[in-house]
Image (cartoon, rainbow, N blue to C red):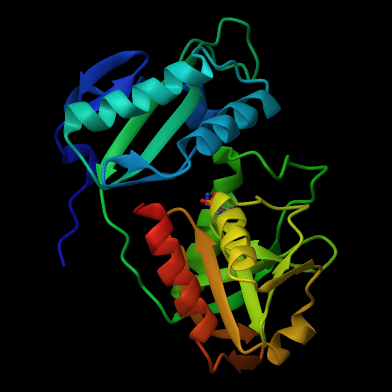
Amino acid sequence: MTITPLHTLSGYIWFNDQLVDWQEAKIHVLTHGLHYSGAVFEGERAYNGKIFKLEEHTQRLINSAHALGLQVPYSFSDIITAHKLLLEKNNISNAYVRPIIWRGPESLNITNRILSSNVAIIAVPSSPKHMNDIVLHVSRWHKPPPNSMPPQCKSSGHYNMMMTIQQEAQAKGYDDAILLDQRCYVAECTTSNIFFVKGDELITPIADVFLNGITRQTVIDIAHKLGMKVKEKYVVLAEISSYTECFITGTAAEIKRVKSIDIFDEKIIFTDDKTTKLLQTEYNILVNS
Ligand code: PMP
């Protein structure tokens, strides 16, 4: 399978309030965001020309910037309007959408008042892959504790380690890894939240030290509407073998069934998929409505 490098696509990118030709949307090599990860971003999905939960993503983007003291040069409604304009001008219905705010190239000091804040929004044509039966292991790396990095902030700095952890998992033949938190409770995967199923109950870790994903919250709402019980609790590795299903959630991943988890030298295989399939169907209806 050939992979098209994204920077070679065509279309428009929203770049500091201008619609710029895709090939011309370039930044300087001194960009602060490149050197010190001075950037925050979102991952969104457009279905049939409409971005699912755009307001929630935009608010999280602004909150992430504020958490790092990064100025947001446009208002909430400017950012919403820019997203809509971008999809319209590119004539894209189904896309993965990436707004990003980053510090500019004006200084190599880690802080400097002359550093600018820049914003871009990129819409990459894409439809969900509906990939199931992923295999996970437990990473040797833990989530940073909440007093080391704000857990609800989607900062590029956070993804430096997530990338390393995912690479390490894939090199060992897994799709992704589960990270424990500083207390050794199950937290989440590198770029998604995790759920387990037991009987008619969903179990998911309490989102106090990791991102409380928008898809996670949507799945909890769907489950409540379906009359299912949802238990948010601290999950330890030893209890995972008592669950019959496991799935991960995220805007890009949507809902993916997990086939097995290798917990160091023990393999847990999930035998059922009834609840996961039901939630996938309901999620699909919701995002396309
Ligand atoms: N955790 C992390 C670390 C993530 O990067 C993501 C993807 N944004 C998620 C969870 C899932 O969040 P959401 O459902 O809002 O996409």
